[in-house]
Amino acid sequence: MSKRTKQHLRNVIKKAIQATRSRKEPTCAHVVCQNPRMKKNLAACIMVGLVFTVCGNVWSMDVASATGKQDQHQKMVAVIIDDLGNNMKGTEQILNLPVKITVAVMPFLPSTKQDAMEAHKRGHDVIVHLPMEPKQGKPEWLGPGAIKANMSDEEVRAKVTAAIKEVPFAIGMNNHMGSKVTSDKRIMSIVLDVCKEHGLFFVDSRTNYWSVVPELAVEKGMPPVRNDIFLDDTHTLAHVNRQLTKVGEWVDEHDTCVTIGHVGVSGMHTSAALHSSVPTLKDHAKFVGISDLVRSEWGWKGAPATHTTIPSNEQ
Image 1 (cartoon, rainbow, N blue to C red):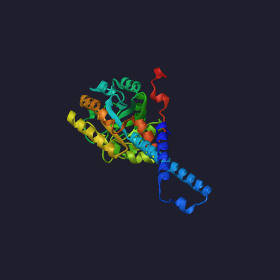
Image 2 (image 1 turned 90 degrees about the vertical axis):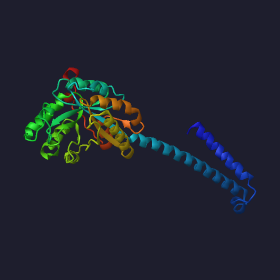
Image 3 (image 1 turned 60 degrees about the horizontal axis):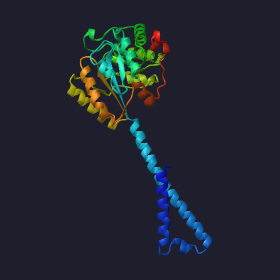
Image 4 (image 1 turned 135 degrees about the vertical axis):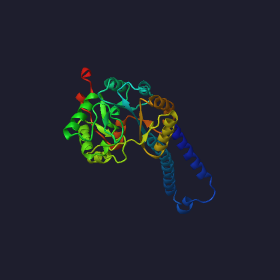
């Protein structure tokens, strides 16, 4: 108990004693207890009651204050930035954000290892941004190592394993495109199995409303984490700012928010909007890496295998 609280307690008790002594009308002690010893005992009981009442009120206020702070700290925003690994616009600006974020790095590209290692060095989370076949879109948008619906179980397993080993310090994975594959139970079951074997979780980017990822994740004892808000599905600064406003509104109503942006076409807009919005969003929630969120929300205890996440020249 602080000195200020103790002093406040003494003042309250002192005033209560003075008020009791100054009262002229008969009290219950006068009416019921004529014996001096009984009077003293009753007075002592009254004093003890006052002390417990005041202490109880002070304790309740302290608990309420502490609980309020705890509730506030439970609010979490996990920002995931996709498409790193190919020297895309906005990469450096994103990595320079003053809060912890998650970068989703595509495998088998010119700056895959460089971007992943630099992000890790700056304290950000790194996940594999695995290309997956969409329902629509140009084949060249996929990038190397893509998972396609016509692949055999063995091909899918081999490609996912290779992608994990390609991205240093990866602690999870999400899908690049993939509106077709994320609704395929056969393929996604293999993808999640390989992730779990390597200590990784999978974030459903929600490029398909009918994605089977959350359902399969629960069945396999993995966190059913998924994207809540896309920041830059329209490539303008005004749109990204509006989406960031929605992020603030979301965490006012929920404990967590996962939001996805990109480097590349909208990279400069997304990075600029995030830099300017961080102070405001900090009033709504704490910025965390996606690994912090899945551990807090779902108790995820997966640990990536050292040989698949740390470059051989750093082991």
